[in-house]
Image 1 (spheres, one colour):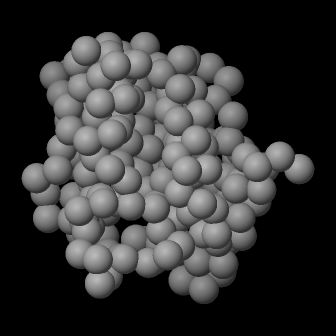
Image 2 (cartoon, one colour):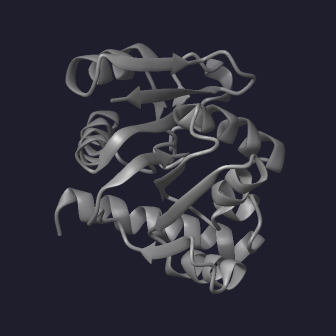
Length: 210
């Protein structure tokens, strides 16, 4: 088993345990509250600014129960939504939630096999478990390169910030350097990159527009 497979298996175990404990709730996705989830959605939404009246495709990588699609609908967006998640039980819950909605496709796994206008990822880089920081960074870079390859208009992701209060940091979480990720995106993905670090959570969001 290679390192990526080990990371994926560890991630599945972690989030399956959360869902088994808390059910199909925000805590089952390891978020503290619905309010915190929505604050992160507000940042990711900025990637598609100006698309309110257009139709576009979006992939939510690590989609959970598809809550970001509900958020976009409530904001008036018209999009073809694909949700991808590692945890089979989570995808099953999302499928029950959306039924036969033709604008929603839900996929269990980690592979991107088509191209989308936009790709977003919220919270997927937070829990590193026992993985060393440098190995986790390598894993992240691999995923972001896939986002770049499979998006036409851009992609966005968030991370816990290295500017978090030291006394509250946990060994099993990854606290990313926002300046590193902004710089990497600017040099390797696009000249049009935004770093959002001005909202009331201990994380940041990077928007990459093409």
